[in-house]
Length: 299
Image 1 (cartoon, rainbow, N blue to C red):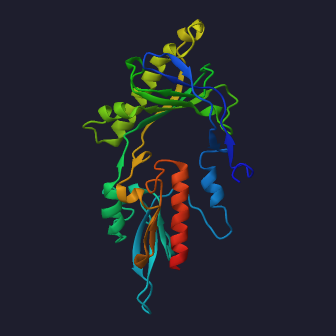
Image 2 (image 1 turned 30 degrees about the horizontal axis):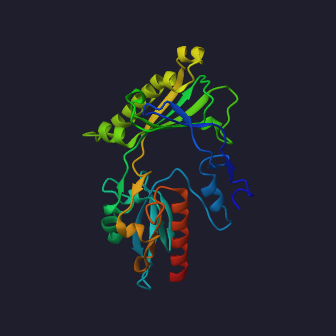
Image 3 (image 1 turned 180 degrees about the vertical axis):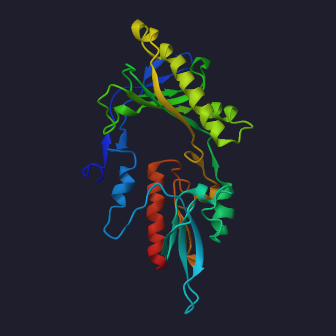
């Protein structure tokens, strides 16, 4: 259905695996699908409904308040986390970001859903990961994705790299190329030791990953691509990021349930940290369906 509705399109091309002294090898052919024309198109289309109003790029703090003086029911009040602007009152709250329960966040600090904030989420770990997004003036490598096995030191911290401009809907007309670089989990674990400042971590992610990718290019391309090996692509811009929740390791409890409902407080949680498919779109989708079913049953 998503394909026929043009929410997703197939991502084709060459995909390589490198490292471990085995050189470069072509990855086995398999289907790869991406949101079209942007990464979040699936979410946008699923939420496209005349009775749903979407507010993006906004973090909200939630609190339960008494619903007037006539009864004992409560409603959820959402406020902008910086300006404290009222964003509306709602009967139910659905939480999908487990980081909203973190000690460093105020999203659910006044929500009184300790079963989720102090229970469920506290036992979920994450595979450590650093990423960088970089734009090159020109980089003539005929490959769309590269998997690094982490066993060859000449590839440094790299775990995975993707040419974002090769995905349907992300093409550019100025010949510049956008790449997403991701660290190997073992490298990220070492790089993050003793580091807490998020600004410094982002700078480190950018500097280390871009440096290692540039150094890796001569080892990735074919031996007869002498001209490319001698060219160091010009970096137009780059930015680093820490993926703190992208690859969850669910607890046994979370793995055995698709979502969590606290009906007495009109709260339900869902996300890719529930169920048997952690960190995958399929897992997040199935968890969302489960949460919707539980909510409908409750009302």
